[in-house]
Image (cartoon, rainbow, N blue to C red; front, side):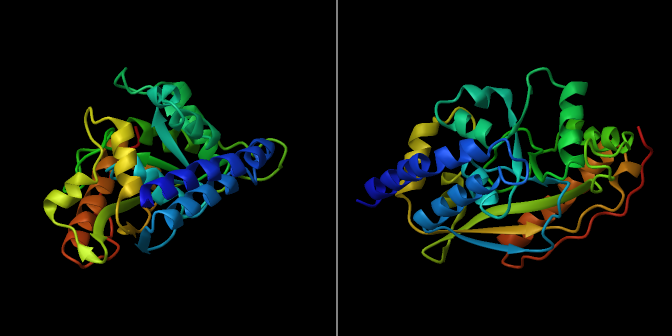
Length: 278
């Protein structure tokens, strides 16, 4: 019964919110708010509790997170207006691909190994415009027990944006400063009882796991608590190479995930590192 009611609520929310979103999609200052309402409705519908600590990212921030499941998008998307970086294959997914396009996702081609200048320029332009954008820097999802190595190529968008100092078109003013901030995410409890290792792995969506069964699993699941740490943003990240940025962000996310696992969540200061601009 719970599954049927939640599935009905999911499609009802799509039907009700889609028309106003299509109308507001072309309005830069408003197009993120209908997806925000949709994600918050889903959080309420599924009985998910989100506990977040640390400084919230301001506009123009590239938010770098670990990645456990497709459900991460709903959790993070319910916190504030933002967009996600997604692999180009997502566009062809039934329903979810359409939702990703409506959410103004930045699509990149991961198969070529290195992202193109066009993709980096697109990301830099979005950040300079003041968008908050989430990057799952592992390049894939994991079981949520440890953080996989971060891929650094898209971090070069901050250097690309730094070198473009023209005022925003039609606004006559300088864009907001681009920022880089790490966040740690963990699925922690159901019915307020701590998840064990095997249970946390059950919430992960990894490898060749089919999307639809996992979607049904989440819809039918008990009330879930997810914890998030927003770490202090990196200071002047453009003085670092992209690989140094990736190393510092990985350190913060890993330490945060370990703190969450041991019941002591707190923002993790970045490593003291220097690097040459590439």
